[in-house]
Length: 239
View: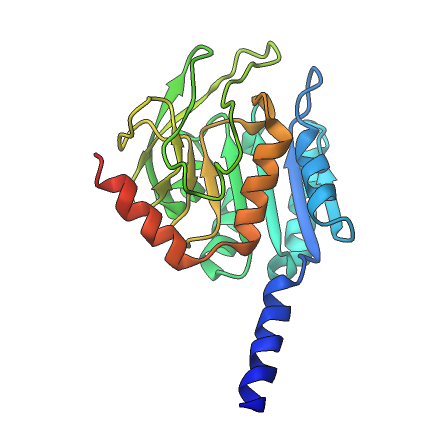
């Protein structure tokens, strides 16, 4: 009994441990794009955060840190919603995702190009453009990502880039671009590792951006495969 108690404490302590190394690229324009840093600071103030925003110098710096730190990274956040997506090393991101040691948040304004290798691996098979500001909806109100969020509305800073309708294969849709869930209108999706998130909904544009980032990142770090599969069953049944 004593051994069991010690093992339980050890497991609980490991589960509660904060991430150490977090690598971020997030576009920043017109006052949009900084909420991810606020959310990370709120959640994990002692983490080593390597964050880049500049569309011209950021990709090279991000790629260099990704190569240097590799699978010692706890979380990679890729939020490229207007920048030079082709300058990032998506193959390395895909390799790290497949290795299973790094948790990901991945969003890109041009999923249907070079970045598709990562999205496909995470469980998304197709992409459609969102061409104007339209409503966004929670499809699973019981999921930690949607908890406490009352407004999924959004605006964009004038770059003319909106979002993507994700067609899912093995990912789990949590939000979407239609009021009722469909397999080809997903927004925020839990990837097929049960913990990472792949998205066609730009959280930088969201009215409750910081709160949504905190939910998503909290889930990424603390999520579980069993939660992902339970959610997937309930959402898929509605198609």
